[in-house]
Amino acid sequence: MLKLENVSMTVNNSNGFRREIIRDINIDFEPGKLYAITGPNGGGKTTLAKVIMGIYQHSTGNIYLNGEDISELGVTERARRGIAYAFQQPPRFKGLNVSDLIKIASPGVDGMGLRKKIRDVGLCPEDYLDRDMGPGLSGGEAKRIEIAQVLSRDSIISIFDEPEAGVDLWTVQRLIGLIVQKYQDNPQSTAIIITHHENVLPICDEIIVLEEGLIKLRGSSEEIWPLIRDDVQCKMREQCRGEVCYEL
Amino acid sequence: MNFKPVDMQLLDMISNIKSIPAGAINIRRDGEPVIRQSSPNIKIGTNADNNGLLVEIKPGTRDETVHVPVIVTKAGFHDKVYNTFVVGEDADVTIIAGCGIHNDSHSDSGHDGIHEIIVKKGARMKYVEKHYGEGNGQGKRILNPTTNIFLETGAIAEMEMVQIKGVDDTVRTTIAHIGDKASLKIVERLMTHGEQKAVSDVRLYIEGRGGSGQILSRSIGRDNSVQVFKAALVGQNECLGHVECDAIIMHKARIQSIPELIAENAEAVLTHEAAIGKIAGEQLIKLMSLGMTEKDAIDTILEGFLR
Image (cartoon, each protein chain N blue to C red):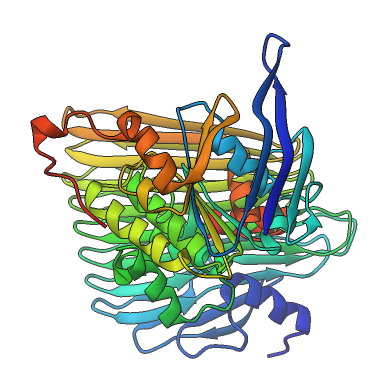
């Protein structure tokens, strides 16, 4: 479905030195699967997502979507071919409201559909449809609306960049549940979640660990999760007795 | 009534009227009134100096609208008018003003509208003024509105002043005097392009105890246009005041934003926020990632910003 072939991205830093942000990435994302990309900060996870969306141009290698080489296509063309990306920190828009953005994401959506998409991410449509997407919105609210936009696009490939970041613990489970429900076992589409969340990683079909721009580990969650669990799981659970821990 | 298509187009742009509405209305074209009609509660007459209107709204008038648009279509014509509005006690009305100029000639044409608005005790008023210019000539389209507004005890007013397109040169002056427990909100929206120049000078004197004043400005400067926005709050009593000016700058435009806070009383709370910046690349990318072209993304951001 989406195939990355020897994809690397190099940047020149302020000292004029070349630095490879991602190196020689080869992944064939299969339809109907839920992928998790994890790894330490600065490992290249968001860069990889932005390379797939066309926001960053990769330096070498090729990207194929359903057999078509999309390496030279811009963001708009890739979006129209079925790639969607939920930003880690969604930008704000003064003057545009929540329903404007959902309508852009899902042209032709009717009033009922609009309300449902807002309600699905745990927000009350009556309170939020006309809310300005400016700085008055909290980080968690903006994040939920961001996820609602990507969910409403019905894309072939949907990438969620740390959907849990900035969202309260009560809501995380619901959002993740929504993503899992929509994409798992759906042969039409693939979801990629960039995450460190200990409740998300084990339920994905595959886990890809990215470190220093390289794929360090890759395999089914049954194989990979036991190997990374100690790095990811909360070390303080014994002390706090896991009061904010939920099962999906 | 002899309206040409160009007249109706201008009226539609500035007042959203596609036909002559019922109720109180005065349409001024090239310095002459072409329609004047009063309603039982709103009397439109000529002022004592015979150089403009006196619009008197009876106390207690509810949910009525008065239209006073001005259009200039004669090449090289420069119109000047002095209008006074008196909104009676406890009334709740909307005033729709505005000016549209069509100029296809090489001579400048313009309109100076000098308005005095008195909002009496306990009254509510919404004032909407749109400015618009069109035509293919080299002659400039010039609009210089001056508004003096007085809010008596407990009066509430909102003024929406919009200039979106086609006005080459404008100097807008607004001075407000806000009484006890009165409240005024001024919303300005402005877009300049080409070689246009726009200056707006707003000054709110919050004189009464418990008074409040708010100035919100959103503007977009494109091409080689120049904008100057001065917003001053003078707190003379226990009061609240806030100025917020946001601007998007594009191409080679120049925008100057000058908020000014003057507190003359220790109980005055005055604040301001000002920001000028280009469209963030992130915003464009975000909308493009939803399938929009770059051009559509820019248009959507600008349209939303000035909404």
